[in-house]
Amino acid sequence: LNTKVASGKATSIREVGSMASIVTPMTPAQAKSQLCKPGSRRKKTEATIVAEQRRIHCKNSAAQMTEVVAKSGNTEFLATLVKDLLFGLGEGDKDSKVKERQKRRETAELHCASLVSALIEQLLAFEENRGQVSATSGGVEAPESKSCGDHKLVAIISTLGVFCEASPVLLAQHLDTVLPYLKADNLVSRDDESAILTVVSKMISRIAPILTNAEVERLSEGHVGDDLLKITY
View 1: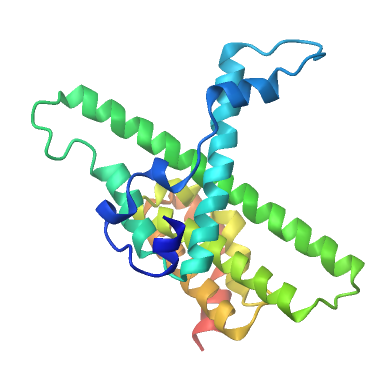
View 2: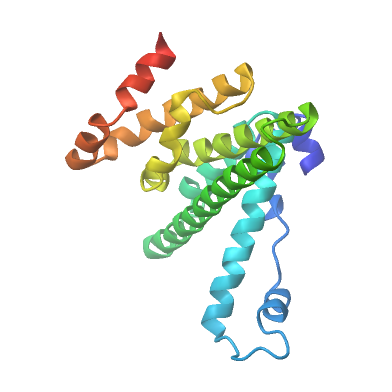
């Protein structure tokens, strides 16, 4: 699938497949073997194992999604996939009960929320690692390594933008994490900077209508307005 996406041939949900086909999920047995190793002081409960398994699965999924986006250079296939996952459930299934469809949709929303959280963790880890590399190298980084890092940053933020486009509420609680990228000082190339600013600006415009008055007032007291004016003019 990665080869198809990277070549730009996969453009529809039927070609890309379901969310599960993008990633290689860890089996329950594999998760349990990692979480309940011999010699552990306390055996984890089944519920804890399942929760940890889901966290690992979402972390792996997020990593693979950003990798595919970085290689393909576009997010159209992923946007179609996420929208179908959130809003396509039950289509063509007239015999399904409303409650069953609603339950599946709620499950999909929770899964997407977990994926967004995993992407945010990936973003924070990337920035932490970038800071450490800069400190150890004296601020001088090999061109190839820097270019790869720049593209990865764009891929992570672009993937977050896909989920925000599908359902802005998924990114609402993470707005403070992405706002700093609006300052146009992300230490990347001009093209990558432009790509980041475009995605973040769209995310803000989509999240703004669902913010509370208190949240809007808090943002207006900050530097968001100044940052928007700066990148516009």
